[in-house]
Structure formats: C-alpha cells, structure tokens
Image (cartoon, rainbow, N blue to C red; front, side):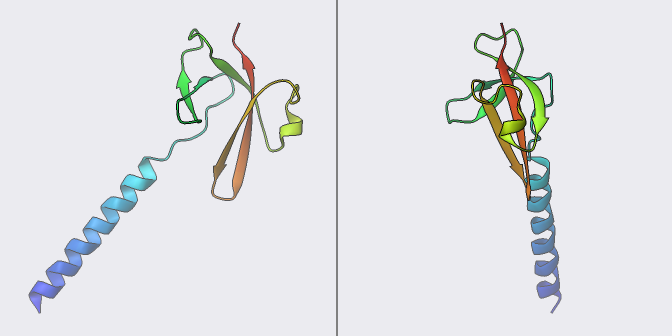
Length: 93
C-alpha cells in the first residue's frame, strides 16, 4: 500500500512540474514601442529597433480596423485564452 501512495505522490509532483513549465513558458505579446521582425516559421520575434527589417508596435487594439493605417500596414494577432490582441505595426525607418 505504501508503494501506491509514493507512486501517487510522484505522479502528482510530475504533473505539477509540467503545469508550471507550460505556464512559465507562455510568451506575452510585445508592448507598444517594442520592435519585432518576422521569423522563419511565419511568427515574429522581438528584436532591437535598430535591426534591419524591424517593425515597431504602434497600437494594441481589439479589431484590425482600429489600427490607424490598417489597409496599408501589417498587424500581428495574439490569442491568449478567449482574448485576441491585435498589434498595429509600422516599419522602422
């Protein structure tokens, strides 16, 4: 009986460790003023604003049409739970 109890405790500890790893590995979207660049997998990565080809986050909105120049400038979409954040971008000159 004691072995079953120890196995249960080990399984619980492993489960908590995996949950903590998943929780802490989440990435928050960039903030207004941060710069990003397209990554090779279709996503984006944070970069220095002096990086060639970087885009600066100008606004954080809930609808693409709320971006000032949404017809001509790119945007990033981040979904976290049931909330979608749209980041309006402009090229860094």
